[in-house]
Image (cartoon, rainbow, N blue to C red; front, side, top):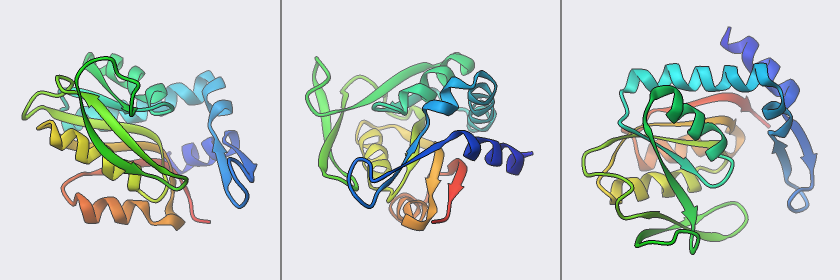
Length: 182
């Protein structure tokens, strides 16, 4: 069933060549989001996977990660904490460097977003090189959270992000639903 779902998701995810810069084939998830059936299936799979890890809070990464983290938190009847880019949160924050494929950015969370020892699932839309994912895990751990899983819809496995995450955080289980090998 999982292979069938991956095939159906790949049919919906649009590839946009040379976006946001030449040589990048952007994976556009908006057609997937517009399909009620597939969007709900993605949330159902994430929910089933997350429930087994017994998180106490869900964390979504700006901005597309919010699209999957919020309904996951709702289905699990948990709270939602958010990771945003520097300067977007109004209260006291904790900050980490968040280099990605395009630029050096910074991620931050409110200092009270995660309680020490709280079990956390982090959700994003995509894992590429893994650098943003690693930064998000670092940030949650900096606040004292225990990351029990990192879920994403898409994995660009040819960029070896999963390996980078596993090397930096071998204790974090990773789930992706669609894998692009090239």
